[in-house]
Image (cartoon, rainbow, N blue to C red; front, side, top):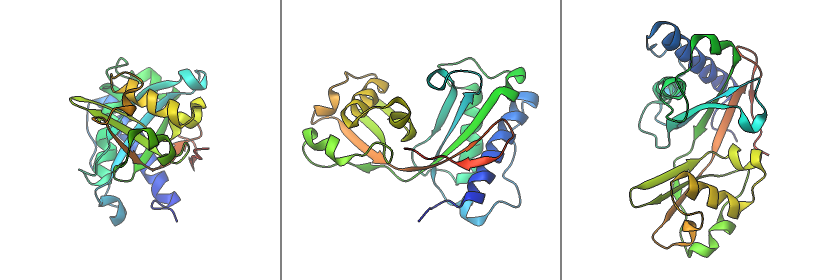
Length: 205
């Protein structure tokens, strides 16, 4: 059973789009709408991903930032993540107004991360591509990849672990280290079919 109804997913994507447009065009941060469903005021993790509709699929990323932990009400976290994805992702320059009509907005609502227990060599058997996202932590280093990423790139579970280590700035085999913590989570993902277009629940496999 889904945690997020389709109409709530559409609400969140529209909210993220509005937040980005208002900030990029006018430098203003919107407030949560008065008609926000009460369920979306619960604290949940969320990521907002921006893709350029004209770029090839594996080169389309234009920004992705979020909150892995449920520290903000979902409606507020979505607004914050949307703005940060547009203007604060260190991998990209801030989104410019002329780009807005080329962006596809995607919202991923996350379950709380769960530590994968047991011997490190068993970790690939305890995750599933197309279901799980991963967080790798070691010392001051941390990296996260959403569940849709390995499915889009065709990785298996070991490659997924290696790529998450790399995202954290660690050697790709650090997942075999007992001092490395690996967390898994799931996500419900909603995206625009085109800028300002219909919103659909995105399958992960």
